[in-house]
Length: 340
Ligand SMILES: [Zn+2]
Figure 1 (cartoon, rainbow, N blue to C red):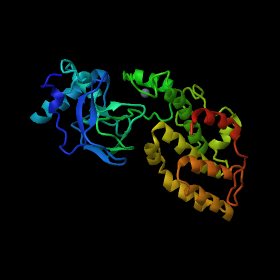
Figure 2: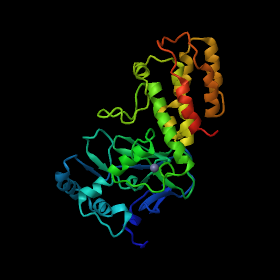
Figure 3: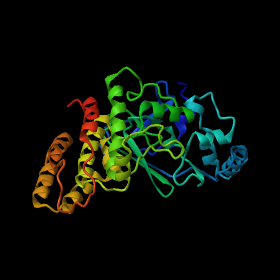
Figure 4: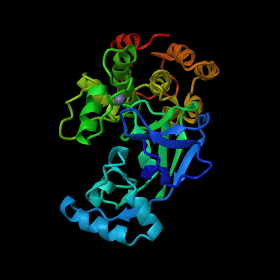
């Protein structure tokens, strides 16, 4: 590594808990300088450049025009961006520098925002960082404990509900290559179970919300998850037993924990809040008692096991019109994915 690598000069706040350095087979990446606790903030960043969305053909002139309005310092920073971190591979076109470092922070037609530092974090399907935004400011935090020296990564796309084959397809389209990912590299036990866990997580999400996060309008049956058409219809119409959401959330927490996504899952679903709200919606006193007992259990697996005692019950407040889905269809999948 030449000491004069342009990335060495990228300004990163002194108190940032990470440093930029070469990452094996991935160009450059960001590595924790200290232990970072779950929930801690990792970095806050404003965009260096904001460029109106346009056609690929017109993009070069548009990005150049935007870059030329930058002050000297920011233009210099822009010029330090390198293909995959390789000091010798400068971008020939401005638009390519932008396309490797931008974030879509609003709808797809909104302008592209280039973030110099956040774009240096590599992708992982089993990440440890979540990136959020407040207007155009990006803010990232650790969703699990990160050890000093560990690479800090985030998932470039929403991938919690995708199998490795689906992820590969999507990442290849974007020319993102993942070589050392334990959820993707075949032949290890984590990977084999990971696909089942994510498929089940997707099914559970559908069972509790009526929405399939991976259903595609043009090919809805390409990766089917629920095969029973009547059950699918009933769930989409939210006519299932009220305990179902409770049990599905707990099982999803168990699976997310195994998958290394628990902190992320807790955030997207505000799970703890939703679970205690659930207790209040019950109408049968005995059921409330069981549900409180469930929530007092120490681990997510114990909570789930206790919650199964509610399986098949009809609560006084339950006006669902159909019976419970056949747990028997789901259990074999759970057993394959779970090693307590
Ligand atoms: Zn992967």
